[in-house]
Length: 328
Image: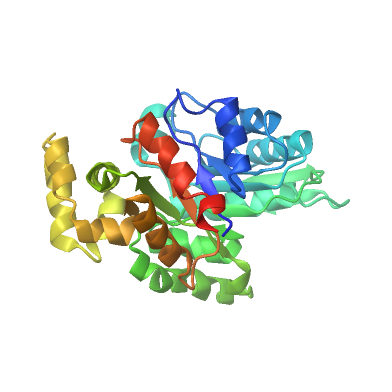
């Protein structure tokens, strides 16, 4: 089995030796995100410097804080300087991050995704035809394209963003959509692709799979429950997504989180929610769970995501036990 891994947030873990270890374990792609304090492109350049040929991916960079031209330039530069396969994962992020951190208006996010992806594709298309674009949000004219082959993935949760994904993107990165609902959720992407004259089979599905593996199954489950509680509690879009399958449970998690009771929010996450939204348990059990997720018809490139709640030992154990080398 070949799959990717999102670089964890434990700073004592993410070292050059750790990146080399991920490559030796057979991971196809190492992904990294950014919110505050790190830059995804710089981080991936550092990873590439210390590895041989592992693929690189952003999961995700937002479409508000960088213009399409800046995103295209960053992706093309990273690809040319590392000579690696690169997947550019983009998303809207959240109103909190865009407005309170970047000072931008969280305006028309689905349209922003659509036009950003179209423009980045145009800017990285190569050839002699200069880029011209007359959109609702962006008007650009008379610049030569960069010669880069960078597939665009979109982290889309709600239906409007999923439709934008189907219209223009090469891949979809779902998160906090119950695994049993992924096929139905992807149909929104697929219908939009057909409307645009595209083949839905050409759109890769690379879901986040929040994962924790330990001989102490309870500790692993606790970490994944903490991950779910954070997203359901702090992001209304995530709460709505999870509530499609777990309405009462999602509301209980969100209410406890809003009240500042983080432990209660985590405890409100049920075992059924964990099994639908992540992977947790002992090595043998977790590998079997991950195989079942990866075997779902909709999924092409599962991404191992270590909860921020995991310590160094749990982080290292998880990437080891769920690696392609261990999974066979």
